[in-house]
Image (cartoon, rainbow over the protein chains, first blue to last red):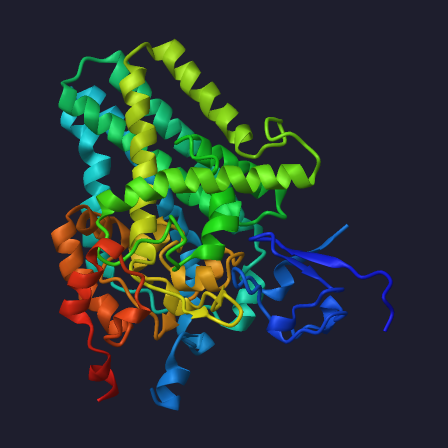
Length: 58
Length: 404
């Protein structure tokens, strides 16, 4: 698995950040999981916003 | 709970497209009745001035609390839910945004019309109060518009109009506190904007208003800090709408004189009060369960909000009352919010529920049994006021009842 170019995505509603490098083990998302590989029906664990409501942090 | 019952919980009611197409097409234009709230005070000011009868200045308030309730009673619930296909068509249609862009300047005109009328003519204190409360209600409707548009963070035009709508009551910090605070903590004891069972509206407000401001300021400071900016900068999104509020209030004071001091205090106070009432009724007693292992609360689901599906009040409030879907899908546009099966329902639209909330004994007698039924008699599953815990447990706690 490439450890380069991990990205961060931010929830548009509550600002929660999904960091690809860290994943979310407590959500069953392993470290290194690309955002696009998270299931589409996954929602923000903080505020329940849809996956499509996350934007890429640059 | 049987599997079938669980499957019935919290699902958007589906309908055949043919059943609802006509109403949804008509509803597009029916949202224009939401303009009645900025237009009512303008008309009532005109009538008060032309007839010389100051009681007209109370017309908007009477319509808000009682007129809408009668219309809700007459027209009943809104059975229509857009199908998935309709959602795709409706969600980005510009028309629905334009309704809100039209409303915001009318809200400003409503407040200015009331300010002009109460200051330029002689009225009794009672008529003055009616005019000031009408303007405050318009400012409260501004919070509703600010709420809807303040969720569309990636749309600069909507965010601008949201700030202008919130500026009327000086509640510019709302959309920060609401999005990043309330949507995260909703239906938990940590949320100053979710009321607890046994907590009266008058106790709630003392926790809600300061709690909301504190949370907004902390969130905005943290955001600016991440950007390497000072919290006292023009990038501060609490300061931006505050400047609009100060400009409007100063101009009104300069043009219409010192009578604007009590007037504007009532406008801002009553605007805040509308939001307090809405926050109070939207999640009363409802509690998300905490996962002890992760320390995180379960996700907010449709059954963590009180829903109200009355047709007229929903049109006037742009579906704010379809609150279950709103919290489950916070960025969903008002025109595509859906009604759900298996969610807790309020017995009336918001304005009448606000009246009940203002009379705590009436509120508790209506709502406490509903909260208990929602929790299946298990008070451990209720967001409860610590001061009332013993009393409410001894009265209602009966988790076996449902199991039997």
